[in-house]
Length: 373
Length: 267
Image 1: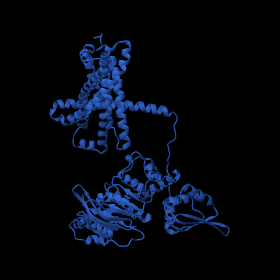
Image 2: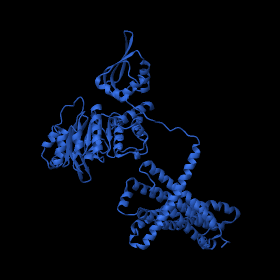
Image 3: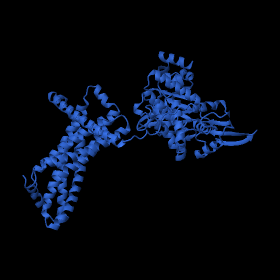
Image 4: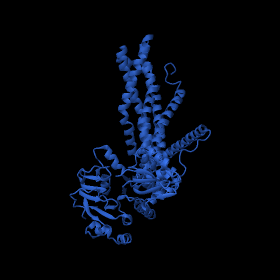
């Protein structure tokens, strides 16, 4: 294929530019900016353009020439009839507004207001969702045949049973690290045996529920948002609605109930793994015997702490599932929205869990601490 | 029907599309058996066949999304699956594909969707790209104000048009269409077919399309290939194909409605 070439000559005091070859994207000499500069330097009011020798002109070639001509027809132009239509099309380009909209004043204030409004809207919608779920539960009391047992057990398995290995591993490792670092400090004061109090209270009451909440938000929360979101994108939720199946009853309720039940169990499991890790570490580091540890634990950690941990697990699980389902239902049919809502679900879940944890800490400050009970 | 006698000499201009002895099987299911097909530059080939006859599979093999179990597909004389990545890229830039659902990038605006293949070339400046995008938008008869819309805000007909503009962004020599009018109402489908025909006349690209819409076929195709029984049972001008005696062709083309459409379209 002949690449695009430019020849110039002067006849009768006029500048003649003769173009030949293929003026198509694939055959234009690179870099195109150089070619464009060359064309622009040639252009002028007294130049005649001869395009008879060109084999093909595509829209890129035509746009380059059109721009060199200053976006209007040159006075003298000799172009084969079959190429004329390309230039006519280029001449007819109507461009609209592009580029970013102009920056407004006080953008930060607008953004802040938007954020507050969005947060308020989300809160209202979550409350609506909770109300809907309560109505659904009421309905199920009257019509127990409609209870979605299969969905419930599937969710229990996916978000509970399948999370057992990872929660145990993380719990164990945190227990080991915590015990190891604390024992270094405690040894300084000769307070070795207080490792049992330290690990018992911190892991059972605080760390267990928190670790599990973060893990579950990342693991099951994101999965719930993505699942419901894709179901929205593919109109599966609309299909459910047309079959008369309530989406809140069939999709949201089983997830919320399953996670509310699975989470407390995971908390106990993770705390047990953490205590076990701490016990192993204390044994290796300070020579504390397993027998002593097991015997001392119930003495120094009031059983109320276990109930607080389980209670936290229940609330955290319910919140994570609610928030994840809420964001899943808000996914719009595009890829960007799916990723944004999944991120929002995980971040909001973890933030809310930490806020609620702080509330728990205040409300239960008089319960389960040695000496207070 | 003379496609099957492959010429012994190599032509100076290889056919735009050459399918040589392609067989496809998924597990134990045989989809195609020894398919041969040539499409010369400038032709508009309509590929028809019953549901599940492997039309879309063949189309995916043509554009290199699927590797045939046996045989080869050559575009412009090169394989889309060539060892050399440069050849592969060049071949892929010389054809455009219009997907059934449009396959627009949902995170990008209409403008950015059309600009995407142009930007990927990395040789054009933003101003040229801008002119080109609005040129293509005009070609598919969309307004400049549509450029800032997101794919989710478009109607079905507009999605197809934007997808067509994107497929035509690099002025391809071959346009591959998968069910170009599926999901459009008859009026929109009719318009879209007219638009395609007009653009084909202006830009003189080759078209390979899968369709089971007779109106589309009658309105566009200069040649028809019929896929049935795992092979191409007929290939030629619409009149030639109607001559072939096969149950599928009888059912597909010779129902009363079909006869009316074909007469109107090919008259």
